[in-house]
Image: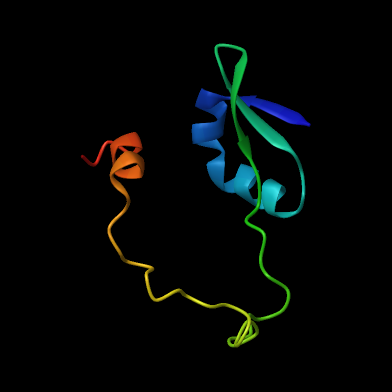
Length: 78
């Protein structure tokens, strides 16, 4: 794990982003205290397929009916 202070991170951000994209674990610290971790965004390997849950999900006819009074009060609605 590479720990870099905030000032150096601002100066070398492009290089740090490249290193993180290659898998290196980078922590940015402020006054010697770790504050954030720089990590690559994970990219989905396979594209999402639509319709995979078709016929498996059912929405009740009363889905948008008003809540019972006691439940509405619990949520602060009434």
